[in-house]
Image (cartoon, rainbow, N blue to C red; front, side, top):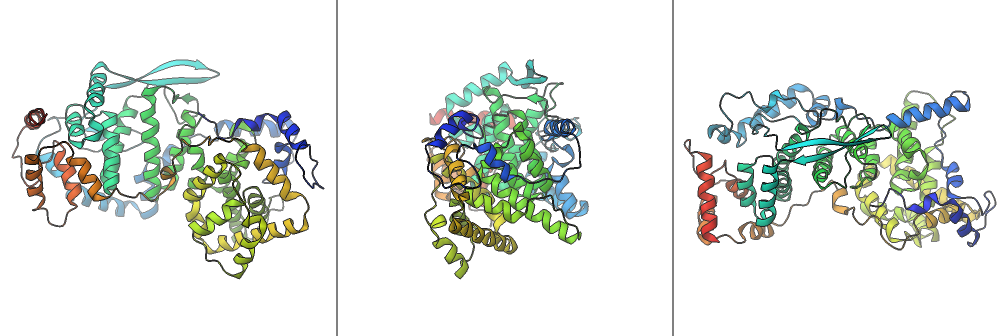
Length: 546
């Protein structure tokens, strides 16, 4: 699994040898200088109180240890929504949703065991359990594998019954058949693969609330399985992605983070993003390329700057396009805050300077941002984009090109602010002046870019562009219908199609999916019919079709 930056960053001796082979008109910086020295000019210039070197070093070390500590007060979406809109508004919306949801039918059918208090009595940190969810069946657990360098390493463990269910899921190809997933969930309500697959299916239908419910049930199950010593919020516990049983937790958390972002709960998404980086520092799902976005949307500007300074105790994050631009945006908003407070901070590098350096390091971003945001091009923008520095700008390699696309897809909404667009134009004009003066500054940043992203292979191809977008494009209805009806007899299809005729203005595809679930019967009331009997009948029908 590739790390956040290619391995070339740590090989300084090789960098120096390569640089001697490159032609560069350098006046202020020598040719032999490495990337780390160049990055000193890309400093935030944080103001610090006079202190000894040892004191500053100790403070930085302590901050680095706590930089990814998760603030549990901001983990839940409903808590953030209540802070934004007020408790009364959110509670009223939730009550209306409960009354209008198909949960009433599920309650009528008695899916929950009688006499139970419900899962809502069990407190979990990541999601709020819903009253109508089945009881936790303890089919998943967690064990401590080893302790190393003060860190505890864990992995999930499946029970024999769960493993048998998983075998059925894989052998039957249930992930292609919603009805098979429904049957498995009726018998094993916390089967993770089925829950995550249904969450994805509902997302493709455009039914995001139902998608969230399935996803949150999976997260609830995974949290219920935690080891008593597992506390991922402190940064002292690890859950290696290399263990297959751990992967579903990463997938569920990442999709949960995306849902939070789409709902506008950016602070909660930021905390989940921290959690992902805490669990495995190799960052298998690329949370590092979203954390700057959520920090900006949550207005955690100072935290973002400290994170870049302290993460992994080096300056390599500066070279990634998302951080080089996001830090300039962060400084822009901090400057605006200082203006409102009528204060100045002469020790801070200006946002214009940071943005200028970002455009010299990654000039190919500008055209992508103008097209994606979009930014209306006037005469000034036309002059800027015709300059060779931007007109002839290329990413310089497949890895960097992929990262540029990820950044623009993830962050383009941030650049729709007119003030920020004007700031970008001012910084781009400053870059043109530096290029025309031929001071060698442009060449130095080009050298840093080429050495850092010199691989001929895309080291980030495992990060899919669609997973960095807030725009969830539903699958075409005919594609979904073909998938759901595939392999099923016409007799069953005709029954369901007849039921769909009496659904008023409801989403027909959504109702069809609900009809496949064991606790729902479209167009009819069960009148207390036992769910197990219904599932047995559906299993027999499936065997007859086979």
